[in-house]
Amino acid sequence: MSSELEQRLVDLETRVAFQEHALGELSDALAAARSEEARNTLLLFRALEEIKHLRAAMAASPLTGDVGSEPPPPHY
Image (cartoon, one colour):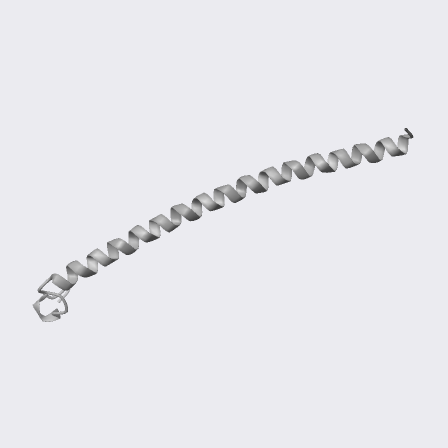
């Protein structure tokens, strides 16, 4: 093999190794993003459920919407 051909082969092997490493990093980043998305989806679902429960509790409360029954703020 000529020296030029050997150098081209070494360059190609170096590129392939770099691309394999980059693909591994991208795969890890994608897996982390999917995991975070799943976690955020769960947190959002829980927050929405809590809001539903709070709304139901407020609707059942006799004081809901009756501003006149609340005492004035301390600065009055």
